[in-house]
Amino acid sequence: MIESFTPEVWLLLTMFGVAILTGFIDSIAGGGGLVMMPALLAAGLPPHLAIGTNKLQSVFGTSVSCWNYWKGGFVDIRSNLPLVLLVFGASALGAVLVQQVDAGILRYIVPVFLIGLAAYVILSPRMHDEDAQERLTRKGYAPVAGSIGLYDGFFGPGTGQFFTASLVGLRGHGLTRATGNAKLLNATSNWAAVLLFAIGGKMVWMLGITMAVGAMLGGYAGSRFAMRHGAKLIRPLMIAASLGLTGKIVWDLLHP
Image 1 (cartoon, rainbow, N blue to C red):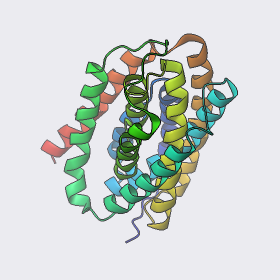
Image 2: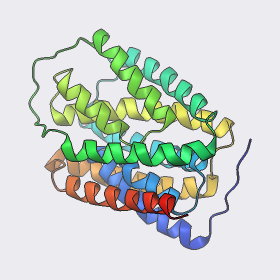
Image 3: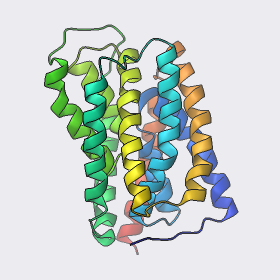
């Protein structure tokens, strides 16, 4: 069933600004969806439309970031091609599955995901830029990548962080290299989900395209910043914003 939502001008301008911020955050540390998803839900979008529209804006910002990391020598497309294909298929499956979930149920599932992901951001260990001993081969890592791709198609926020953390912890990548390759896999899962959500009519095109422009600006600036300075200054901002906005969603659920 096709859902509809007509954004007002103030909302387009506001979400354009939010998309610049989340594109910047996402390109450095991942987790931009931790800010964007609560913002879209707080703006009044039904959960399916919020997820689909978030995918539309995110895919452009992530793709721009991936391009920058690739130019900087931090992305290895050829060796990761099997993972790219696996992640694309898994994300497409996740996007199909979530569109079968009743919107009323999704209203309660989404805040639980968001709170869990905010906790993950706070508790995740510090990471450095030196390559380490890999614990899994690329083939051994495939089930992990596929599971994260499935999650991204089904919901999404935090996917970039999951890819980055797992590439550091399991594949032994240094943080910047892991972030670059995470953008490759995340852009892949985003494109698969966008196609399926668009086919399902779960997207607010005007709002998504407006935010996509902001996400590209933020992604370009953030990825260049990350290759120079790292993500230390972004982490506290991401935690505060995601917890504050998630708190609003939970408050609205408890006080309808």
